[in-house]
Length: 296
Image (cartoon, rainbow, N blue to C red; front, side, top):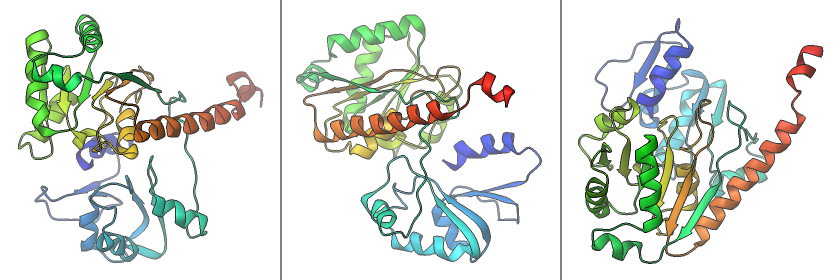
């Protein structure tokens, strides 16, 4: 996430020196107005920041880590502000809101003011058996044929690392002209592959939940094989769906879950996106039109 944010924030604040701190960065810290870092790096500071923004506060490694939560409270100045960002707040955070310990604000629209893409579900009980036979569901093949013709880029999520190689092998067999790779958390080339996808050197990545959040590939679609697997929590499914529609050039796209059954987590993810989109519609309805804006 640090590597994702640093160039984007540097482009937005060209005259501001930015420090980027993470475990693989050997550069020593120097004082800057803006610091981008992993939460573990906060253990190096004490009452150092006027404003502290913790992104993906519900995710590993910050979630359920008392040491990192303690670090956050130590590094903000006495009069400083702490902001938690998340698309999928945990029950613990919501409980703090209900108790009045945290204030909450909703940002239901992205910067391009389009709604979040809805989740499309396809029940395919035998997809795993087909994969063992070196095949993929017929509907998926048809969708991928369209992608090949249109040069549409996509992420294909699978529940288990062991499924990466067979899925990739089938894709190479059916679509030898589409460039792609597999990526997972312990992949030694993970950062390189993600950057290559970002640079549009690949048309697709076959991945695990490692890419559910923290990455932006403009204009992609997302397909999840086995979306009803227990490894895909409601938060994970919402985050995966959130990879789609992130650019103003293509603010919509396909979010497609292929699964054995319509699981509780899938239903909850669909419900959560519907709630956010309802808030988004209400916000858009309250916003002045261009003509009203100039009139005012």
